[in-house]
Image (cartoon, rainbow, N blue to C red; front, side, top):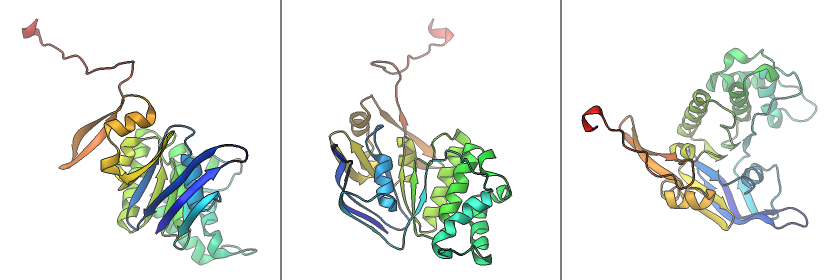
Length: 260
């Protein structure tokens, strides 16, 4: 479990980035953090993962958290397997090298995310989607019950977005607790049980289905946002549509020849 209680963060001589943020991420659930650029999404998830110390409040992580940053390549020519093995650092300890158990855990994690064939490829030569999956495998290899992801779909094409979201749903089904920041409200609607909205006027938390509405998303991003229903294998879901252009209204109805 991951729990934030009254968490706030601010840089020296500047105003608070956010403050008084409280929520829990239970095993087998996902919480999505949304907000415009500069609202503090990455800062919040880094505080949750233990990479930044909050200026106020407390963060409780049950047995640690695996962290998946945004894939931005690497200047070092490590193989994909070496990158995943780095996730075993907590188990290996200082001044020791990974053993057979660590290698087996790394290979198992790569198999779980569907990239065993990349083990000997150099990380900088991989596509953005492949790099993202390798970074997720690295976090899984750490053996933590909580996974924190910073915008896991950034830079990915539609196929790889589906691949990553499907993988995250599988991890939830296995009992893992997920916290992710995202610029895609439709991803949050598909994946998350709860949502955290970081807005200019404050923070809202609650069930994703209730919080991610036309009204709240329009207020959050400052542009008209609409949610539309669809069916996924018989399951009723909603997706997000943003009309482009000022005052965009409904699309005109096309007339067939008999109406002309």
